[in-house]
Length: 356
Image (cartoon, rainbow, N blue to C red; front, side, top):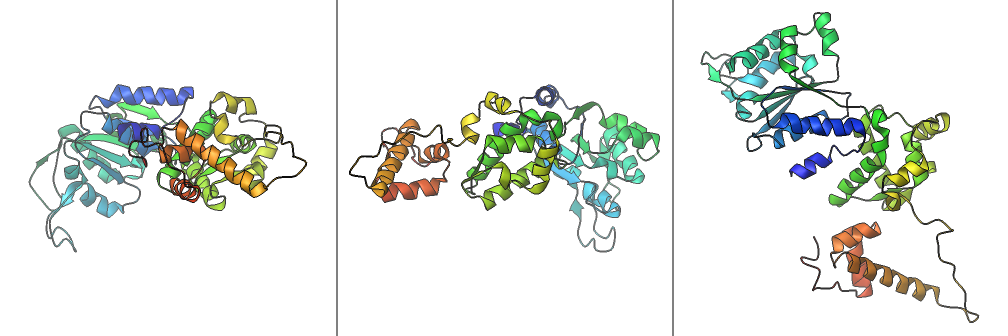
């Protein structure tokens, strides 16, 4: 679970290596963390990693989007309420602080919180106690706070829109997440990871030529990794188990590539050690065939060639169908069907569970 979470922050760029280091540094402490970054950069992913690498990982991680909850309901959402506290409160209800007791509370879009709620939050951070709406009993709180925002809280403090004392309470350990355009060298690895996730969900796979990846690297990605993930899924739907070339990309990405010289070069994609993942064989890479004078049966030749390739893939992956399917760029169910068609059996001695 932890390794899967950390893979969500994949990247070898210096800025992402810094983020990885900061997560490890702060995870074992109880310090409040403020995650800063544009929308779609993965702020909640950072928060979840901090929690799962912390001593609180056996307790709950509770996320709250402060910008998505009406201001008049946020206090009840965070602290809970007693029966009859307001119209519609027909029963008592615990809040997110109680749900996160002993664990981590993630407050996303903290910059959207009203000044009145900021005062109440500050009290919990300072005194570690709160009361439910409509209640008088003081409830102790042992919760770690991780807050996040895409807004400039320092400017908001200067403008009188965010309390300075609360800002300093939250900003004990800030982590700045870079925009995707600021770590574009991570793009090939991100594409590979996002495609792998689709395959793990038994969704359509997809591959990208080097030229397509270069074109994508010249686009600014205003929606960051979230936009990239949506684009990969869209391409997998439009080109199921196929190869996406530059001409297949959306117009805005092609236009950006045509008007910009920034981004990755072909040799940089080679250096990322994922060259075989993105490339399909060119005409010069394909073996030359010498036709016999009497001709030959193309259908039989292709069938035998497919059998040989599938068998080699199974041999190279110890007979594990899922791994062989990934090697061949196929869904596991597609490869299994081809194996049934050609009466191919995996090596039972090496296959283990066979479908893992």
